[in-house]
Structures are given as C-alpha cells and as structure tokens.
Amino acid sequence: MLQPKREHPKEKVSLHPRNRHRERYDFKLLIDCDPELGKFVKSNPYGDDSVDFFNPEAVKELNRALLNHDYDIEFWDIPPEYLCPPIPGRADYIHHIAELLGSCNGGKIPAGNQIRCLDVGAGANCIYPIIGNKEYGWSFVGSEIDPVAMESSRRIIRLNPNLTDKITLRLQVNPENIFEGIIENGEYFDLSVCNPPFHTSFAEAQSGTRRKLTNLSSKRVVKPLLNFGGQQNELWCEGGEMKFVGDMILESQKFSVSCMWFSTLVSKESNLKNIYRALQKVKTARVKTVPMGQGNKTSRIVAWTFLSKPEQEKWIRNRWYKMI
Image 1 (cartoon, helix red, strand yellow):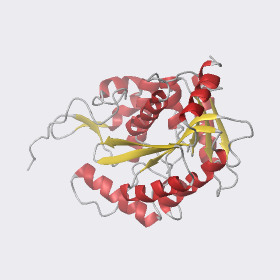
Image 2: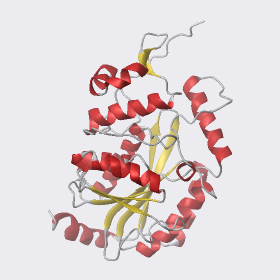
Image 3: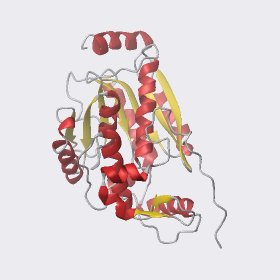
Image 4: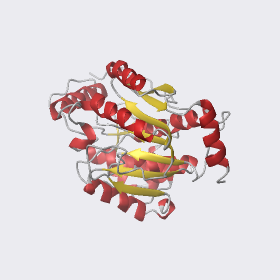
C-alpha cells in the first residue's frame, strides 16, 4: 500500500543561503545540460521526478549535470569506485569557510585569485577547487597521495579551460605527512580545507553506508552498495577521523605562519572533545566550529588559526589588498 506522500519543502533551509542547491533539482534543466542524465530520471510513485540514489552511475551522472549547469564544467568524470561526493554538502563547506574569512575582513568575503586555498586530499573529483574557484575566484593547490586520483583531477583541469592556471595539484609522496612536502618554503595559504577519512576500517565504512542508505529508503539495508563510492584512503584509515585530524592539528603547528586558517570537516560529534584538547595543546589563537546540516546528516567544520587578531590584520593588508 502506498504511504501518504511526504511534502518536501521547496527550499533546503539547512543549506547555506548562497548555496546554489537549496531548491529541489530541476531535472528538465539538468537534462538539457546533460542528456545522459535523462535515462536515470524516473517518476516515483507520487509522480515526482527523481534518480535512484542507490545507483552509483545515477549519482555520478547527476553530479556531472550539476557541475555543468551550476559551475560551467564541460568535462567531469572519476574512475570506477572512487568517491563521488554529494555536491550540495561540498558547496556548503566552501560557503561557510568563506564566511569565516569574511569575519576577519569586516564582514566582506575576499574574492579573487590572490586568495589561495590548500585542499588536503583533492581526490579524483576536484570538487572543492571547482566550487571555490567558481564562487569566489580563489586559486587552489590540491594535495593527493593516490596517483590515480591525482591523474583524474588533472584530466578534469586539463579538459576545462576555465580551470587552467587556477588549480595546481601536488603528489604527497609520504602518506604519513599532511602539510610537510606540500607547503613549500616561503609559500602562504589563506586557508586549508579537508574532507578526512571518517572510518577506522572497511567494516565501519560499510556500516555507515548501511545507515545512510536505510535513511534514504526508510527500509533496513543489509548488503550496502557504496553509491558514492570511495577508496580506502578516501573513506577509512588507521585510527579513523580522530587520528587523521589529530595528526593534522599537530603538523599544522609547524606551518603556523604559512596558513591563516586551517580547517577540516568533522563527521563524528563524539570526536570534538579530543579535537579541542589537541588544539589547546598546540596553543592556537582561535578555534571556530561551524555546524552544517544536509538532509539526515549533521556535520561541522572545525577551523583554527595560530595568528592573533593584529597578525591577521597585517596578513590581510599585505596579502589580500596589496596584490589586487
């Protein structure tokens, strides 16, 4: 028996006000941009157009259409079984971190290629650099430990002329390091972003996927399919999110004057206590936690800086305006 139709709001108010994906997807417009999406769009039992979010190919094609329609990306693809990120959530990170930069600048968000961002773990999809460059004109350096993922992102950049000379990719040859070997001597970044591996093992990653798909379908899922894909270094690592973020915090101290704001997504609220303790140990000047909510999931950005307010003001004078 068909359950009563659940009315969806016209606008996803949990997303950032500048997020292009607050309204429900207009599949007609998206299919005009990417005709291949049409074969994945079906009417659900209530007569609404949608795609099967259990189908990895449908999810990838939806991403391709969104990137074309909203971010002027003519070519986008990823290798099989690599992470296919949900674009609205990634866009939210960029908009919220832009607000953080603006809070240091009298409420005015800095724009232009003089603003340099380091994407720790750019992956095969290059999503953060694409969105950050389109929305604010920022330039990016993306680090990556996986040569296959790096080549995929390089191909995306090469086949989209609007990204040329705006995004640089660097291979991290020592997977034990995060900033060492990536940030060069005398190099400065205004911020860093990161989507860390959340899980401690493949089994934990599968369990998380079961919960996500169960939420999508309202039915218990026993055998999960990674509809958003993901390699080991993208989804899990020894020690999981806490170990990765803890290492990042410790190493960031060595680059305290090389980056104005460090930041990372934190998926598990239970990790916050230990993350704050780690930030206290390295003597940060300021820590900011920004809550984010997308659908059934609640996440947050944790950002930190070693620069005092006068040092930040000097940074802004010397870098953001001197270079315009």
